[in-house]
Image 1: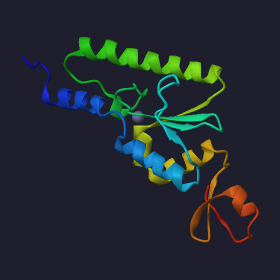
Image 2 (image 1 turned 120 degrees about the vertical axis):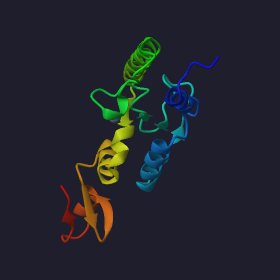
Image 3 (image 1 turned 90 degrees about the vertical axis):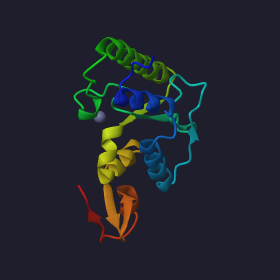
Length: 162
Ligand SMILES: [Zn+2]
């Protein structure tokens, strides 16, 4: 007997296909566009981070807001039923995340988390990712999104986007 409601079942299905989700693909594309090369889902690292930059010792997790309990996020709202199932499960997910991030940091990794809801604003996401790689801000130079240090080496007609 299947006791899950339709929405709970689809939520559970999305756990099954937890890799290569749409937000993750978008983040990968942006990172790739910045010229960084990475490895995916490195199993030997705590929490199997989604995007790994071995030489920089940096990892990015792309977290679904519901599954990873994004605080105060509209996408993380609990279902109305089966709370006794969801609350312990999701709390455990969150605890596991915190522990994995701590382990990674202790091992000298720089850890970044991008939340699913941040994907809703592509330009903001782009500048968030750029800042993860040390850009103070993004600029548009000759019609291209460019990190400011590149502009400093370029010409003086760059338009600064705060
Ligand atoms: Zn969120």
